[in-house]
Amino acid sequence: MNSITIQGTNIYIWRNLMKKIQNYIFTIFLIMGLSSITANAQVNLSAHTASPGGVPHLTIMHLSDVLGEAGIANLQVTEGQTLTNSLMTLAEGKIDMSAMPIILPFLLDKGRGPFAKQGDKGAELAANVRALYPYNAGGFGLFALESANIKSWKDIKGKTIFNGPPRGAALVNARQAIVLATGYKEGEDYKGVQANWGQLSNILVDGSVDGVVIPLTSPSGRVTVMQSAGDVRIISTPKDIFESEAYQKVFNAPGNIPLEVKWEDMGYSEGVSMVSEDGVFRGLGTAFVELVHKDMSFDLAKAITATHIATLDKLKAKSPFAPNIGLGQMDARKAGLCGPSKVKYHAGAVAAWEEAGYKIADCAK
Image (cartoon, rainbow, N blue to C red; front, side, top):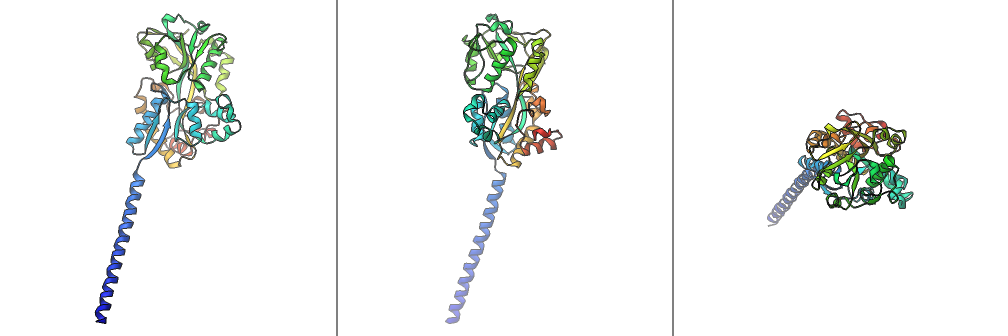
């Protein structure tokens, strides 16, 4: 009886032991399976960009597409943003990525312009962002319906001019472009109108303004929209003014780059004309970067940048203006980096560019 009891106990113990071993093995395989799923899962990232139709929107929406296709990340993009606000949101770690004119991190770092209220805290916030890749958003030009009878920059005297969103970097540069070309000041010589980018399409055709001074790509969808209301005239910055010492000095400021495009390369057809001495559009170019928070992991930043590099040709084919926006332009000066700008590339981005055969200036690392 005792023997049977002992044997039964042994069997019971053995069965319990086997069950525990089986459960342990199952748990190990479950953990391994979950680890594998996690390793292969796409990361969810949040991003900001400007309104549809412009360069910042095109580049980041393309990135969203190719990152999803590559299984790297689900990029959730909020469009129509004023990027001045987006920089603060990114620097505070509330989003992962944003299109950004290079002038804005400089202003934040110095606590100037739209970031004056930040004071010394601005430098701490500006230090939280890193770049992945550069491009430009076109050059500031003046354009208007031919019926507005604006044939030169001087003709905006007493006119109503749309010059960007409230508090945005575009507004700062538009005002600067007007001063350099004419000496005119907003409120004294012309009436400036500001509105968010999402309202621009209506403004271009509703007759509420006489002309527009904003970044123009080659060609520009903004000019095309205005064409629905009539023939459009683009006015280039006069060559003598553009080449003057005063105008050239502006390119020493963060994010300002010279932009020159021949008329035949601008991509327009009937209904659009240009005023220029020699058939070349000249304007104050705006350097942009795709910014991320500094705490983004090396591997993720590298993977995102490498995907951007690998799909540059695909991006250039997505829009008529895409070949003219400085994609893959890693020369620091032409990309608007270094000098007074403290914007640096993320270490992961540097690795991706260098592995792809590009040279990155030490001042941008």
